[in-house]
Length: 146
Image (cartoon, rainbow, N blue to C red; front, side, top):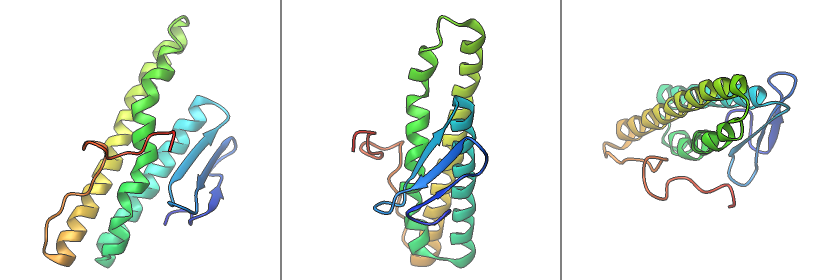
């Protein structure tokens, strides 16, 4: 698990990524919106490297962890437009927010690609194709309330 389960890492000042011990899920905190976006990008890159390691090792167990790792990035993408709407009265901030909305979508796609790599690993190892649950499927991502 990138960063280790139940750990907190600080990839740069103002950014913390906590991976809870119950699910190994990343919780991304930042002092600014830009810090949160950096943290999301960092966590997504770790997820992609994790997927590549699962492929290299042909490790089914590792690949099965990827959908949960993708959940925080999916939530970021889903909720970013609410954050951008808060900037409606500030034209310069709104433009920045729109760019961040596009960045969140791009990061979400990278995360989904990591899950796809996990699916391919599962196929290589088991010979059985199964599509993992992710944000593109109903019920795929737990809400922030759970």
